[in-house]
Amino acid sequence: LSAQGAERLMNLHPMWQGPLAVPGGDRQSPIDIVVRKSVLDTELKPLKTTYDPKTCQQIWNNGYSFLVEYDDTTDKNTLKGGPLQDTFRLCQFHFHWGETNDWGSEHTVDRRLFPAELHLVHWNADRYSLFEEAVMEDNGLAVIGVFLKVGKRHEGLQKLVDALPTIRHKDSVVEFTCFDPGCLLPANTDDYWTYHGSLTTPPLTESVTWIVMKQHIEVSHDQLAVFRSLLFTSAEEEVQKSMVNNFRVQQPLRGRTVRSSFT
Ligand SMILES: NS(=O)(=O)N=C1NCCCN1
Ligand SMILES: [Zn+2]
Image (tube, rainbow, N blue to C red; front, side, top):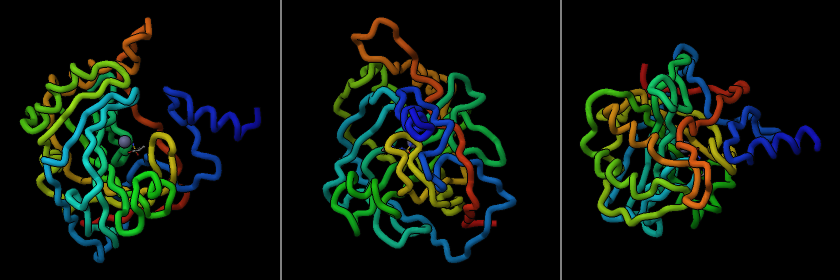
C-alpha cells in the first residue's frame, strides 16, 4: 500500500481523523485562525441570508453527525454578499462536538477550542444545478461556521434537541419541519473571517469558501449533553459507540491568507 493509498484509506476510515491532508491538498480545512495574521479586507460586504423555515424537511443521523436538510430545489434559502460573488443555496446544517466541553470545534481562534461548531452548508446555485456538482468545483460551496459556547439555554435550538432521541442510531431519519436556521446565527454576522478551504468530512474536496463567525452562540450544558447521547453505530451493531469528538484535526495553512471583515 503506497503512502498515498494509506492516506486515502486514512481519510475514508469511518472514524478517520484525517491527520493527513488529501493527497496534493494545499487548501484543507479546518485550520487555526491566527487573529493577528488575518488581513482586513474592506471590500468584504455584510452577509445576506434569507431562510424559509417551511422548507425544512428532515433530520437524520448519518453516522458521523446529525444533519437538518432543506429543500434546495428553489431559491428559498439563500446566502449572498460577504466574500461571495454568486448566490448560494442552503442544503443542510450540522454540528461537530467533543466528549467534554473542553474541546469539539473544528476551527480554532488563536488555538482556542470551543465545545462545538455549527456548519451551514450552501452551494453555488448561479453556476451549478445540484450540490453534488458544486461539491467538486472551485467556489462551488460556502459554509458558515458558528462556534458554540456553554452558557444559557438556546430556545431556538430546543426543538432540534428534542428530536435527537428519535434519531439515536446511524441512518435513522425523522421528518423535521418549520425550523429557521437563521435562529442559530449570532446577533452580529458582520464580523467574520473568510478563507478558501475544503470540506472537513469526505469527500474533503477543496471547494469551500469558509465564513467563520467571530461571535459565538450560547447553548446550555444540558442541550449539548443531548448531542452526546447520539450514537455513531446503527441499531443492529452490538457495540454502541456514543457520537462524540466528530471533528477533523487541523490542517496546514500552506501559505493561505485568512481575511477579516473587521478590525
Ligand atoms: N464538515 S463539512 O466541511 O461541512 N463537510 C461536509 N461534507 C459533506 C457534505 C457537507 N459537509
Ligand atoms: Zn461540518
